[in-house]
Image (tube, rainbow, N blue to C red; front, side, top):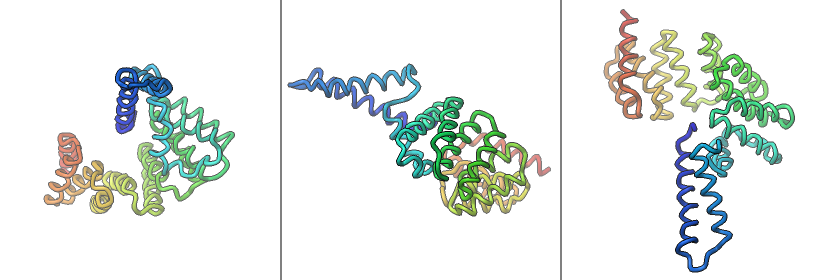
Length: 271
């Protein structure tokens, strides 16, 4: 599972449900059989999920995911409960790395349920994520391009597409994608971070530092931005900023050894 907070919520839910069941069974003066049954059922489902007998973590997944991904989902399928259920199932499968199953469900939504740009955007975003994480980079790029046909100003799609273009060695296209991502959302820290990494590869340390610092201004906890800023600072010979961003990288939970190896490699390339 990609998000530890969901696992914590499920554990707390299991403890609560089991507590209610035990209380009713052993301590209540008058047992509420209906409440016991519900609490016992929920506790059993949660327990089985932890034992990996079921792939879904809990009966509360749909509510958790809808809230977590509300920015992507937006108003999609607001008046179509069946389609929303399919989308939620696909999102759940995506979070459990069941990419092929998720893609099949998303294709059903694309073929039979999507009616407006908001719905196409949400479904294509999750399909692109599934394709990308399953290693199908070219297909993911095509999916993001299709998404942008319906929702051209989607900054997240542009930023993600930039990453894929960069992985595919299409650096000019990646740069244009990042520029679009920033144009349509000037407050996107991930877009500035991704662009800064690309600029480092191009050798533009000054602009890379500018963009990584902008990303950290928007979100000081971004490890990749701190790492990029440290590398750019070293390339520019700015020792004060180098130490500053090395410390920030470590403070945010970054791997100090890996960063030192990256910085050492940069020094060797300069020579």
